[in-house]
Image 1 (cartoon, protein in one colour):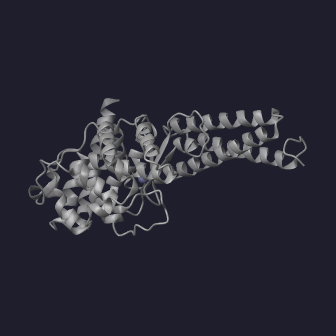
Image 2 (spheres, rainbow, N blue to C red; image 1 turned 90 degrees about the vertical axis):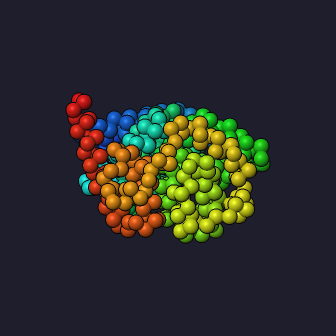
Image 3 (tube, rainbow, N blue to C red; image 1 turned 60 degrees about the vertical axis):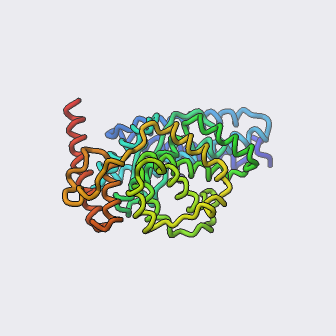
Length: 366
Ligand SMILES: [Zn+2]
C-alpha cells in the first residue's frame, strides 16, 4: 500500500500522534502563565503553525514523494520541539536551585556584552551546552522562527567554571551573525568542505569570543576542566585541545595579561605551536581572530587588576564586574593564595550580593 493512498493506516496513526504531541506541548505552555516566558510560548506556537501547515499540505498533496517530505518535515520539527519542551521543564526545576539568581546574573552580563537579540532561558543541566531555534535550520528544516535560546550550566560544577557559559552564548551569537558566512566560504576555498571543519570553526570561534569576554578566567576554566581529555576523541566536530588553547593565547597576546596567564599555562596547559598548527582549520586563525574582534566590541581588560591586593580583601573586587571577579579568583587559585573551595565560596557570596542588588535596582525602577 502506498503512502498517498487515503486509507493507508499508518498515515492516520501518524497524524494523530503528531497532533497529540503538539497539543501536549501547547498545554504545557498554558500551565506556565506565571512565568514571563512569552518567548517560549511564541516559539511553540510558531513551530505548531509550521507543522500544521505541512500536515495540511501533505493531506492535499497528490505527489507521493512530496507527501512523504511534508510528513518527514512534521516529524522532525515535532521531535525538535519536544526537545525544547524537555529543556524548558529543566528551567522550572532550576528556579528552585539556590544558585538560580547567580546564574541569571552571568547570563545577563553575557547577553548585554554580546548584544544578543534574545535573552536565553538558562537552566542547570548535565553539561554546558546551548540549544534553541537555530537547531531547525541545522537539521535541514529552515522554518522562519524568531530567535529562541536555552543555555545549560553543568549542575555539578562550581560557579568558578561559569566563564564556560561565554562559549555557549558565543554559539548563539554566531547563529545570528551574517559575518560568519564569509569565513565559512573561506573553508570551502581551502578545500575543507566536510561538515566537521565547519563545526570545528564554530568551536574555535566560540573559544575566541569567550576569551575576549572573560580573558584568562575562560582559559583557566577550560584548561582545568578539559585539558586532560585526550584529543583522539570520537567527536570530530571539535578542534584539538592544543589548537583551542593556542587560539585563546593568541587572543590574550598583547593584552597586558602576561603575568596573569603564566601560572595558568605553567600549571595546566603546555602547548606547542607546531603541534597546535597541525589542526586543519589553523590556516584560518587570523581570519577567526579578526571576526572575534568584530563581534566583541568591548573585550575584557583585566590588566589593571592587582591580585595581591585582593588576597586579603575579596570584597573589594569592583562592583558587579564579573570578568574581574572570575579573573581575580582564578589567579588566586593558580598563585596558591586561595584554595579552590575558598574561591568557590567567595564567588558565591559576591554573586549573591550582586544578584540581590540588581534585583532591588530592578524593583526600584519599576
Ligand atoms: Zn561549543
